[in-house]
Length: 260
Image (tube, rainbow, N blue to C red; front, side, top):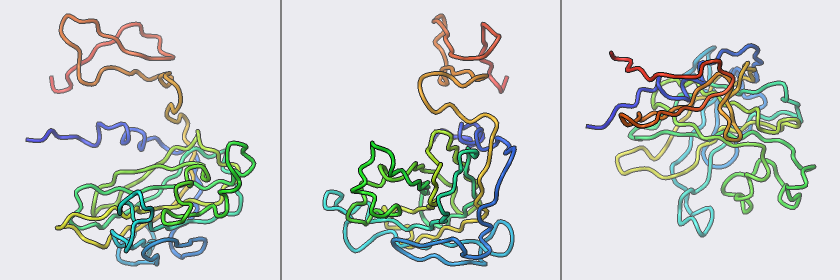
């Protein structure tokens, strides 16, 4: 029997519960103003599923393309379907989290995921070759698609629960965001199992910028202030029990079985 993995015990759930002390609505998805589609599939307004208001932005895509996007990939990924919200060189430095709602409709899929990309104009960064900055919104099927990590400020993947509304939060304090060009909500064409659908649909709603008081630690070996890092699989009886922490007054710790 497989072990259960309660979502409420995961770090991703814990971080998603942080309250936003300030927020800015980028798009309520009641129109396609500011939105652009690139790559495979299509993008449209939909009244079938919505979290707030009357509509959502629907991204529809096949799971496969006619040819591999790169000879070395032998098929996967075939490319990507992108719904991009465009802005004009905005400074988002005061914001440290992006959030939105998504309803994935992928019948037969055992694991559902999506990719987010924050696009920033980094051409003044000496570490980035301007030769490859022909188009800040290159998709996977572009002839230069494998350079996209160098061009854009950041990328993040999210595992989703199928056929329900998911609140997605992405903390971005470590990502350059002083000349933002847009945010892409992306599906990679990875194929499908025989019993699964060959056409996927993602409904998006309420894209927001947010500010949280204490973002997660994202660099180095330090433990975030006020947090403790211990061995989650337990400690052998009679062996030393060590945990790491910072900014705590306590010198000792105990592990307690929540059931007893």
